[in-house]
Length: 470
Image (cartoon, one colour):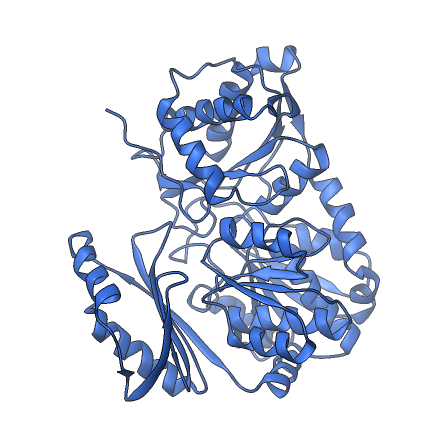
């Protein structure tokens, strides 16, 4: 008996050769083909891309041969490409949707099946609910060998990068970045985003040097290809040692960005999200902001200062993306380091995020640390940390009970002013907030805190771990 396929905050993910197998990828592909036919969009075709993980190309080819076996056109990427590049190509091709074989920031043993909507964003909860049912009820996958699919014109090999590059050149002032003479270090983390910054910024006074640019599905030297502080020790060392102006890091499929200032300090994802909002608002963009519930209260303060709306959503771009579109927001994002921008696609894009940060530095004449100082001058000083806590699966029910049914009047001696249930639980205090939720893609409990001092962040995180018994 086969196990049910369940989509988390962004796609279905599993351990390679355990539950993420060729047979299960074929099941997903047949269910998706059934879904595309049922919704009447199958003739528009499907874009299929993949990252640099183990067997990603072969899994993508499995998607292609099953979908084409259902007489649905497939546009198969020629080489590994970032998720936002695939998503952009869905819109560029006016395709029915896209599939990316990637598990983004997960450890090397994982892979994933992301479905992207015709708008180029993460499929909504309503869509993935139907897609799960289609997969569950799908029959034996139909298969058309790739050579036959190519001969029949059902499988076309495609290079999505030129159209994506042209789109970014229309959004970002590349001339200003070129002229600024910035020395930029980029940590590609052995992922699919290698080469993109160097390609986009070549030919000017700004230079780009890449670290970990070669594909390596083992992702050596890191727990997982996620651009967070403990994975970026070498980048943090190299930026000041090399006299670079800034360090940028991309996760495995380049839909997230990490930032290191000229002093080698990792700039938190909450600060980066707020920096991007400040830049867009300072330059005159107007429109709502859309944030995941665990993103910074600095965004709320910026929205109030500039007179724009703000929406707080459950974690995951399948929740944030649709609201971003409905609100015609200028910026949408979440704590994990993924941000979407008006005029592009309703999808996280680490490459575009990095370019906007460089544009801010270039046009405002600010250093990377100067951007953060300007942010704190505007909204006050904020500090943040996230702890990812592994737990025995047998203990999940007890943790859930404490999370849901144990009210808190105070935490670390600080009175709790309020609580919401937008996603998991978030407790509001005078000093900031603390939140806890189970990951939608990994067996982890995530505990988040933003407060006025680093000491309060540590005290509140320790107190929440003790409260939840983890």
